[in-house]
Length: 496
Ligand SMILES: [Zn+2]
Image (cartoon, rainbow, N blue to C red; front, side, top):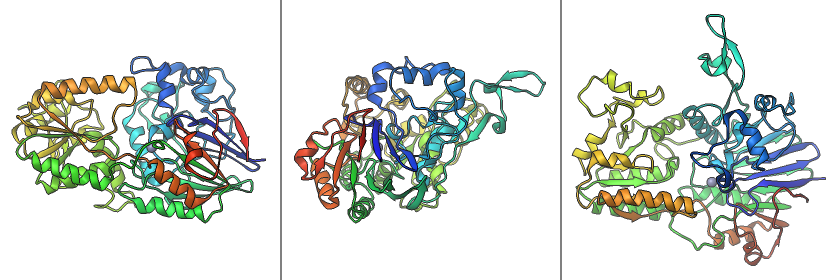
């Protein structure tokens, strides 16, 4: 008997967590955080407790209570049942957005995580820039234990500086971004797809005599539409018994493409000649970053990225699956600058020794301070026509030092707020932009297909059964396609 169970991602956007259970193979498709359900209990200032995160999540039904799924250090600390080996053959991660990856840190330390090398690279960047165990996507930080320090005293593990003692690496057995692999007795194929984050994948799995398609999140109007087309063609020739398909934008018309965005921002930047240009877009969307990079170059400017983006670009630069110049550029590229903001004493841009300036930064950011293409508030203030500065919601305070010239613009290249909290956040940012006289311009392409495109895809694939996921309007699928549609409920198991 083969069954599937949505522990997240049914009737909601994100939080994908789909368990496939068949004779000989038991695996999850994605292990993401539902921002909506998480946000019902937690906020920036109301966080799960470090000592009891797993217990807090389980108690609030944010994650499923399944034996052999979670890491032993958390379980034993919370006096819950541990298990030597994971009770799963693997966890397949479609892409590095947190609503698909976010709870991987909680997984059993020996769990096999299958993801493209690019997705693993992004997860690694998140992990390395994070702190504690909440970003343990690629390694696990041994929590709640003790070690013997150099003086021979017993000390808490968090004080330990030896990575050999403090961390262990998670298993990421996959070495290809396209191809076939085994998960228990199931054979699975991974395909790269076009989405708003690089390295995104879809899967075709054969388990328990059933063929399964899983789209993850995908679109065909981004920088790599040919990838999605090839994946859809492969699903069409796989005689799918079941298609799990995302429907984020099921009720939307076709919007701007990434090419449209590139053209529009080129126009906006050219028009703003001699004035300041600021841009905000999803921080890890390197496709959008490249669109801005190209538009800036065409207008004789440089794109100034933040430290986290520079770190990610450099992490992905050596990835063999990516083509340098086309898919990815290193942070030292001549068309890029790395903008370092004021921290601690705020000495950047001041006339003090480089060494003293560097003390404002932690050991991850420090290597970028003082490099050739590093800039700060002063460079942007004094040269309004030279940069397009990435300015996210965490950096608007820099405007105080930059003092934009009259007629400067802020290009908002991300989705509009879709809940009350986001409305509040955006309202606050708008106050900053108003205060400094910035005109807001908009240009954005979604990471997801429109309803019409989804219908086209289903028609091409002709699966026996369609199961909508990652959507708040699953019922619309029945109107859109002629196939049989099953609307899943969270926590309920279905035989197929
Ligand atoms: Zn996504």
